[in-house]
Image 1 (cartoon, helix red, strand yellow):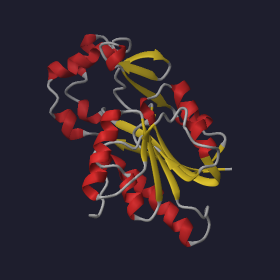
Image 2 (image 1 turned 180 degrees about the vertical axis):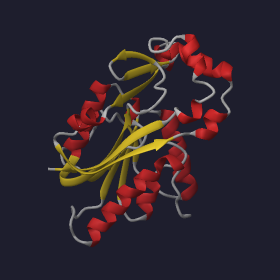
Image 3 (image 1 turned 90 degrees about the horizontal axis):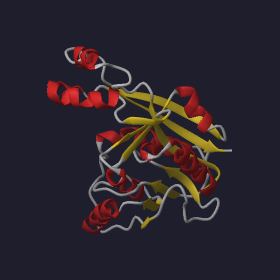
Image 4 (image 1 turned 90 degrees about the vertical axis):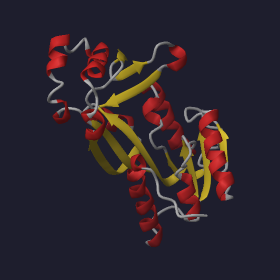
Length: 244
């Protein structure tokens, strides 16, 4: 199998991998190699890198489309990552089944109530002393697009069938969701996405106003267009956690 290079939005997962390997070298972590990916589908599954490093892999995803893409990758590379359709909010695994568990750019699409359920499930299926990696959108993100149906929950889409949810947390709120864990590492990454926003025409910028109308009137929103590169940002908090 060829060497695995993760996509740019998964770079922070490398920090988790390095931390695990460092702890294993120093015999300062759980002894097993069983790892679970919550949201494991897609054309370049990060689990493939863990497989290449000798981990016993398992992954779940709710999307048939994404699982099919991952299955095609596995077929082309002649590997079995042990993927199945399942929901991170209600995992089909026994307590303390895994040494490591992580999610990457999946949990951000849950409501806050479901985020809490998913984090509790990660805790449940992890062995004592096991390590977890997860990420949450920060309220430092701008613009947070979608209609804010509940505090920090932004819903976009024409109807329920194609609705997309993004939940955003401030720093203290995020840590309250993780109060049962030992926080080993916390990083906040802010990405400007300048190339994307530089090419957004005024007409498209004004379409975003539909989601921002409770904060800005149309003239105020339009006035931000010329200086948009200094204000737009995508902020994400990444955590490495240990189950106590």
